[in-house]
Length: 485
Image (cartoon, rainbow, N blue to C red):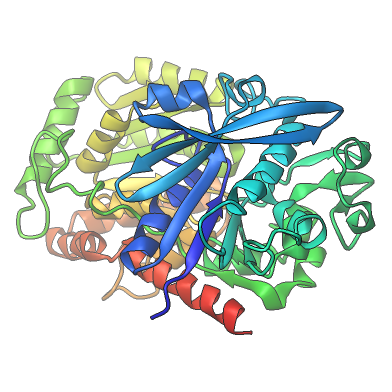
């Protein structure tokens, strides 16, 4: 096997700085690629306060890149961080990246985001060009790096170590496209001959996502079903026709999970370890959470769990439409999340009204999330769309049987009881309605009463191979096809 030199360029990566699943992918997939024998470097902004808060040690490098952008000269020193064997190159520009939020204040976006990420894209390409050997693959992620394939084709071909690199652009969530006023084309020196409807122009504005889709050598999404969905009006976010024109370059590859980190046999946040053949500890975890949160201690009552951003995309309205009904039936609910203030208020009021049946943690705590995954019987994920999703993988890994809407990666990763009962790992519902969601939950609870059948479903979920190895092999096969073409 030929060793590939792969450079990931992304706006976030765990454990350095994270807002969502993008960071989990960029923080995990490179390790899996390294385990297959390849060389990987990750380039991202130096979010000084976030990286410090996550206790990541960094080292200043002697290199600094000078970059002219929007009428100013920016001095961008490079830093290095190591996570295991993985090397991160960090682009410093404190005026632009040392802020409280990665992309904006809570619920908003910084007005200078186009400048922030065009500058980062240019410096990242310069940094990649200074590596010790030629780059085979530049793997870019979401709109923040969508202009890199455009820039490489038009303005960075003079760098011999990156000139022949193939570009891969991964769409993690098409809903966020990086749309900005058209004056940025000239202010930031973007290639104007690509600013047209078949390039990165979108309703007379700049669309960074379109740039990546049009110019990359290959496009990936984070599940096969999502790759198909984004070519439909329902999920295409006004780009379905444009994406369909590039369908021959699109591949769906399901995300993986860091199974060493997400392992109930070794998870120190849990009241007791458990796993295949040692499931008794899960009962202790349920009892411990009930005691900690003030729920009635009852081993038999179904404990329904939800860990999510509180947003329309996640189908939280479908949960809220059913919550009181489920409580009236005697079920318990444990919810962790934050987001929409109205949703937070309703959940807070419900938990106060039913303190022995419902618990709501407003915010995020990884320790609490792990305890809820471990304690839960049924995990709820009623997303309107879900490019891949990691929560359902974590839930199955912890023996928390998912009830999911059959969309995107949820459809690809959870085997439906109705379609294939002998191999099922959870339950699907199709229509994005409260009634359809309730019917699926009621079926799950009916099966939950049959201990033997439930145990088999739960066991199959725990045994599911959610590791990054299979996904990493699929990416390597894609990289190799590009290089061999």
